[in-house]
Length: 120
Picture 1 (cartoon, rainbow, N blue to C red):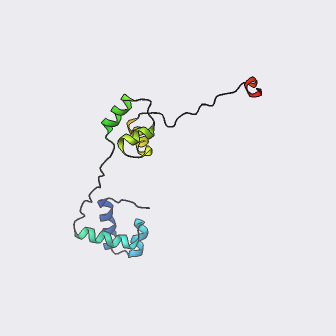
Picture 2: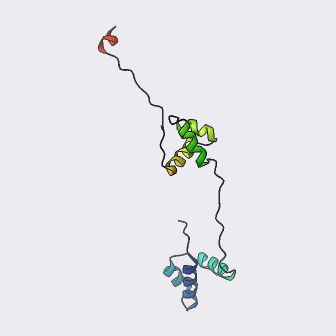
Picture 3: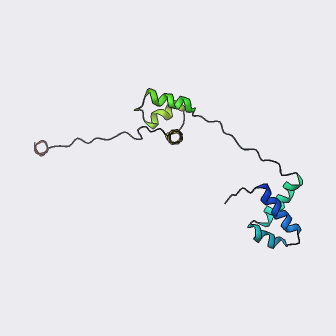
């Protein structure tokens, strides 16, 4: 499991080790692998630089999606996905974040036959 630790916690663990504890004790204390401790030592030497957050370009513009749903409220996810050149799942997630709902699947209506029609 990937876990992000604060710089304060990292400093605490490094100080714990410098206070005379073994690497094994430090690993148990912090719940980290020894290799993680060594990585933190390297980070400390460079001043714990802030890691850049990745930003991804979004295909779905929220304003355009709202506009498309307002123009055609009965459109299916597949139709909206074709407009935005993405998957229906991406449209579903975008609509969920906007707290909007549209039809998910085409409804299939089965015509019921009466007994008289079936016998003829």
